[in-house]
Amino acid sequence: MFQDLAGKVAVVTGASQGIGRGIAVRFGQEKMKVVVNYARSEEQALQTVEEIKAAGGDAIAVKADVAKEDEVINLIQTAIETFGSLDILVNNAGIQTTVPSHELSVDDWHKVMDTNLTGAFVGCREAIKYMLAHNIKGNILNISSVHQKIPKPFHAHYASSKGGLRLLTETLALEYAPYGIRVNTIAPGAIATQMNEHILSDPNQNKDVLSLIPMNKIGETKHIASAAAWLASDEAAYVTGVTLFVDGGMTLYPFYLKG
Ligand code: NAP
Image 1 (spheres, rainbow, N blue to C red):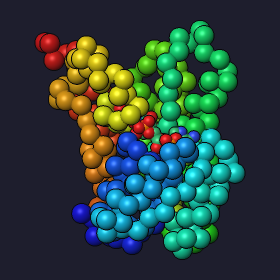
Image 2: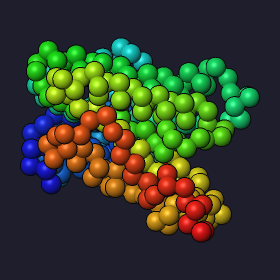
Image 3: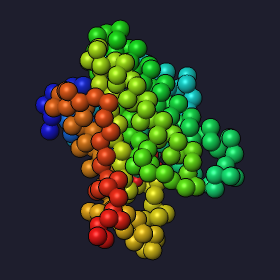
Image 4: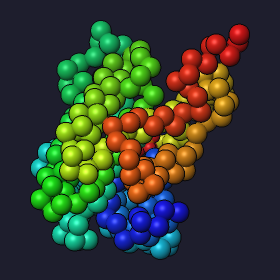
């Protein structure tokens, strides 16, 4: 637990399930006020809200497609109007599809980029605008992926969006460090969620994934959530512009374990 987080106001995008839900519920355990964003899954978002309240935090669910600028603006505004402030923004919402790059349409490219990168940019912009105006030493977490570093064939749009997120994080971290606003990235490895359920539930594919993870186990949402709580807290007060890989060693070139 990080005592300074109690009472802080956070927006977590894509918090109806998976990693976003894990972070939102952890924030609830920290007694924070959480805006649970979702695009389609209202019922699941309301479940996240209930879990946060049961853990001792406060929460509301707000529908917003992060790929739409006006909806992100409304999301941030609703958080401020409801809870009276904004201290932490977690840009977590993300999608991916699997397509050979030479067949990838510009429409599909935009869909992924608009959600994973442009949505995060608009969220950052709106949050920082508010934090500057109210002298809030806030902080922003962008959830990227090991694929901000490891190339991902058949996912050119996804890998490009995550690489962009890294440099967006570093640029904003530098630009707003003088104002005490911290911006960091968490890069998850293979975490058990809906996004990769089709891979992890197939024994052969699961084995292939495990062979890429030196710790030989799939990550859980709680692993990302604890990294998020630490980075959001004052315990990380001197940390900005970093990528924290939470990946069981996946980015450490596991091939070389073979000697
Ligand atoms: P997930 O289980 O598929 O959940 C995705 C979440 O994003 C859902 O809550 C979904 O809400 C929301 N979302 C999707 N499109 C949205 C939009 N346009 N606007 C608002 N919300 C939207 O995915 P996950 O595995 O938790 O992934 C979360 C993040 O971690 C993503 O950025 C992903 O790239 C990253 N990541 C995941 C892994 C992994 O192994 N799972 C690894 C590396 C990085 P609705 O259901 O309401 O649409």
